[in-house]
Length: 162
Image 1: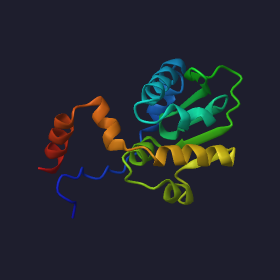
Image 2: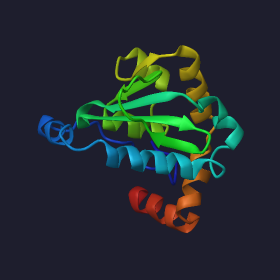
Image 3: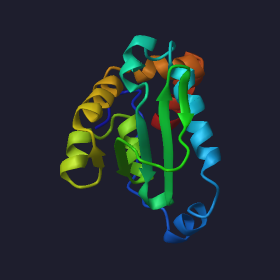
């Protein structure tokens, strides 16, 4: 039984292969620009500038398996930017879209997904732990309230829970 006010659990889904065939042929710049803009927006609002300093000069890849999408980006002194070829990420994280959403909603634990082979993390182990600890320290409720007013979030939660 869900606690009062809790969102329903994200259903299991995998995007159809045809979606990946289409998305993999699209230019990589728009998703990379969207991701880096979102990351930059969070610096100072969701996480401190000091907490992202270890990411400066580092290259990353975020791979959404069932979407056929790989986003390459890097940390710079001025924020995150899309990486340009040749892509040589120091840390690569891969999962399905559903599993990334579930991680963001904290419905799934990264360790559980990793050991179930649903989350792949390759590259610099220390950098991976730095990123994991940074993400674990985020108060997602507060972060969402920075985007949407609490009344909107409460209304959305109530709509899902009845």
